[in-house]
Image (cartoon, rainbow, N blue to C red; front, side):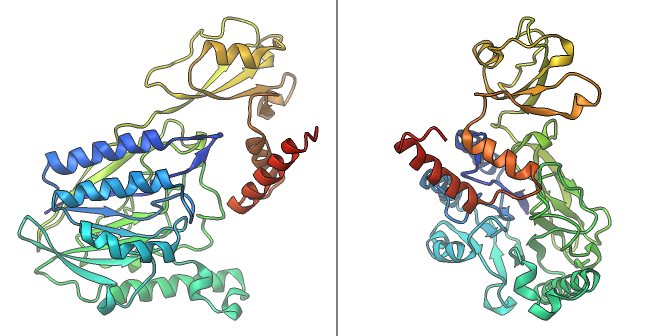
Length: 391
């Protein structure tokens, strides 16, 4: 049985004031080509299909179009909700998705009520697939347990996750290809620099040792860095995100997995690089010399340009000059001169959208810019523009 594992698409994510749906569409087109060309028997998608609970219609069109194409090939898919997805919406459109041979779960179910399903594949082999969508601490802990000492609360959460895993995988046997899908943080996983602590961190982590040794493959989502969890008792992988989602992931290779598995035999895992997304790249330049010098434009990158005042005086019109000279610039930032200033990087006026400036302000103040707060800011800013308010 040949299995393709992908994850964390974050379809519809607004980034630096622009959409990257065209890149995601190219990535999914290539994945569909791989499914067809390499005779994939089963596709696994381990959550954060969308970036928000109410994604843009175009994001839904691209995602559903991918699964429709896979369904036309008679290849089944299994999908679970991540923390960015709406569990209720996933459960709702799952009914239609079944027509394209997609099994989608937004919430944890009893294993006999859809939490673990048997899927016949074109290889002639049967996959037994257990599914654990994202489970927040508030879903499994009481108010009293949440209010306990941090170590006790985290230990209780880990124990509840162990119960879920044991329950879902109780039917794993020797005659099937046994697969576990989960959207969670495993202790020991390497977290990307761009991932916010509100979503991943050591606070609410399951332990790798609770995973079943009877699984041929454990497919994980939630963490954007492609990686194997070596301490797990079965082959356990985060597929990671298909593109670099922020400059904290700059230079990080992105890959999906192709797994070959048979009943009674160890699985073989091969990582494949994603095709279709543009890389993120940072260029540091002086403020007055020719802009294009030594800037790597291979792969049509999204560019963050840092103007280093320590390398010389900064042209007052540097923002326009940079954008005129270089394609793909998403931000222009100024690194101040003087002792200790190498860490002082700030946007050049006029280079960043007001929404992005607000997000930066909240983050630098120690807060977390939620989707609701950003939407409220957008509405207030639009009202100010309509009223011709200089503020």
